[in-house]
Length: 251
Length: 94
Image (cartoon, rainbow over all chains, first blue to last red):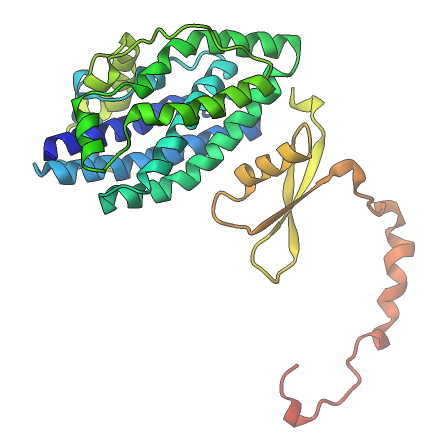
């Protein structure tokens, strides 16, 4: 297995948590109620914490003297490897929750598999993160059910959110040469192998939530190889501004 | 919106063997959500091993106006404190 493949895989993991963490943090101070505001901020902080581990290891594997911070703040959009799903705009609370739930269901399955990784450094990060993500999934699934099977208004919003985000879910299960190399080396599972677990979780929750997934296999893709929607540029502009304008600035 | 959710009083046990202590209150639509919210609002810094949530409506409180009859009579009963015993030196500090 080439180190370049491992670096690629690690940035995919770290960029997912970095971009989603940043997205969720945008709710801070704006959530519908104080309790949800704090819960969202907690989730965002968990994801940023996991980013430090994934990108820290990526930088170490790369061996070019870069740090996790360098990777987060000094790469351009084309070098980011996150799923398109996580850069989708927050929309309303329902859209944010639905995006979170579909991601959490995948994230939990992925991390559970990574706990068995042949690379002990990867397994160690997964074991720490999977506990946090188990709670993320419990929380987002519960809220999707409550709001989906809630009032006419909340049901309508959750169904609209599902219709909107669904075409971005399929990218989680697409495999390329990097994934094949990871699976071959026993470092990470074949993405397609996670789909049955994900479908079982999502199917059960959507059914309890009285929501219907769109009947389509179409999927947007490209994030994992650096081809992003226009939304990522705006995220990076805000996130990276300080380090770009004042290189090397510290607290 | 939060005005439609009932208020809950949250009690956290910090360590095994200690009592649950009142830490504050929050709004939640039901008991399960009250526990979740309490986890997110009050245990972010590793404060607890157990959470109790009690509907604020279910707490019965003494009325401040009854303070006199309730508490004043015990003011003058110094003999209820065990301060009239000589503690043997061998017993040490108690």
